[in-house]
Length: 344
Ligand code: ADP
Image (cartoon, rainbow, N blue to C red; front, side):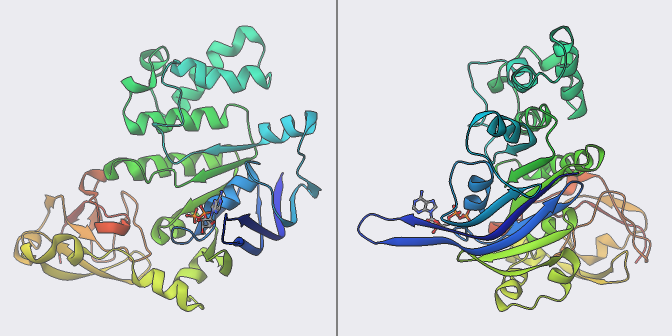
């Protein structure tokens, strides 16, 4: 069991000619093993500064960051131990892997540095981790990053992050650079690992829909201040702060995606919990969608803070298909899913 705490943490940057800029103002939160906390906010709200303080690329100007009740170390063996326990998955899988090194090198390095297994077991451990992130170890272990897709690279980065057997993972916008069709797969992988390895996860995102789906708690940041922090469902369903409400208002909307070109028939869809999902749109119009049992993709369920997983079923007999129908939703993409209209 491990716990990372931010206690009254503030961070000011000196800006040449403009004095100081407050990037974080009195931030308090904690993450324990087995829990996921989402950090949500627009660009510039201070999300990455929190990640940088955790992985010690930056130091807090005021306040304390504690791991298991002790201030995080800045040197020596204590720092090495901290770096074993607290690991990061970066946003850009293209920049975070060294193009001159093999996949084996990336995953094996933290195993060797932290002496996770005896030397003669390193190859087996490397392959185990690659398979754990659903890559075919035999096929890719001796390849270089440029031979892999973005999604595969991010899986390598995840394998590398968990290779030292950390207790806490900081995932800074881990899917925002990936093709939208594979984002859900990578997020589900992170969620599975979080459960199986009992990890604490800080999930940094600007997407409230996935924040709710994948996190126990959400902290909403605005100009470096925490404007809302609590259980995910209450933050999404009963937002208190106007800024959270405005973020929710900017959630994806199918009409926005299909635009004026689509002959959109909007049908009400009833969610699994009996909540009326905002709308469901078939690009070819409602008439096509009502054909019983007809499968189609490209339809959207506007999740509006309520992402649906593959296999979810609805009280009116509709079933979410596989990930094929995942579609980008304009500037602030949420999750959208393929859909089968069984009977409406
Ligand atoms: P986010 O990750 O939410 O986009 P950041 O944590 O990167 O936000 O940035 C928070 C604020 O701090 C922004 O106003 C940003 O311009 C500023 N900032 C971040 N890093 C630095 C830096 N090294 N020097 C000066 N200002 C910075």
